[in-house]
Amino acid sequence: MSENKKQPDIIIIGGGAAGLSAAQYAARAGLSAHVFEEMAPGGLLLIIDELENYPGFDTPISGFELSDKFAQQAEKFGAVIHYGTVESVTRTEKDSFTVVTSDGTFTVPAVILATGAKRRELGVPGEQEYQGKGVSYCATCDGPFFKAKRMLVVGGGDSACGESLFLSKLSGDIVIVHRKDRFRAQRSIAGMVEHDDHIETRFMHTVNRIIGDGKKITAVSLHDNATNRDYEEPFDAVFIFIGSDPRTKLVPYAEVDEAGYIVTDELMRTSVPGLFAVGDVRNTPFRQVVTAASDGAIAAHAAAEYIDELRGQAYV
Ligand code: NDP
Image (cartoon, rainbow, N blue to C red):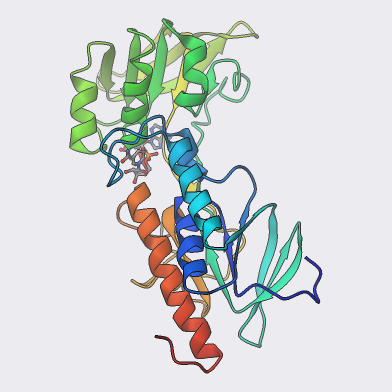
């Protein structure tokens, strides 16, 4: 967009569940809302095979299908989705933000940051070398390549447990290793893993290195913390789900908590007036699609109120 064309009221950075929900609510509140998403809309939703806890969908829906519905609904209300990058977000002295993007430079009174979090890597030898050759961070994407093969899952949260359950539909030979003596995942999902005949659970285990023949994974070296023993075991694939780090680099001036997540109040306001943060990038106590969508709705409502106050209008 050239700079002399009408500017949007609000820019939403990130097109996952939180960002798309914010876009829908902002557009419905009469704001000109522009979303920037680098990849396809959906964010982490895209890699969820089956979502069975999103209210209103009593049969499981795929993350891909749900994100498509989110995007269509936001666009139906007039939100504009750009497939592009945001390069910088600077707050000016005039209560506005200059947002430099691959589609041009915008000046807006409010920004909603919905950039989510980046998946963590283990950092062990062989992990980088075998990415795309057996090391994966997405069971839905890569699991089908290893049908009936022996797969290792690393992690103890909802992702590791949920994705193990997905993989157990493809193979009867899944091992999940977790560094602690119990899963961090919600009890319902953890219980399903522990009772699944296709999954062997090994607590107090860490990965030393991933071994291969140059083209594919052949084995993994594991450490049993309980017995302090190292051993090698054959595997065809390693799926790593050990959490994520918030993407906050566009707003280094916003306050973050000790883990690096953006601090917000109950209206999703950050320490910077006019800057709101939603979803996995903020210090939320529960990271779910439904909480991300809720964050987006609250932020859009609060941002509309903020913009009206700035413009000297009463918000009703
Ligand atoms: P979490 O941060 O919840 O869990 C990460 C797991 O990886 C923890 O068990 C952690 O161990 C382990 N871990 C971290 N670093 C390492 C390491 N270097 N080596 C070995 N293990 C490591 O991440 P998730 O991706 O599982 O979940 C993120 C958020 O998304 C959560 O809030 C979760 O509830 C939500 N989510 C919800 C889903 C659903 O409801 N269907 C599906 C997927 C995610 P430790 O326990 O020791 O810290």
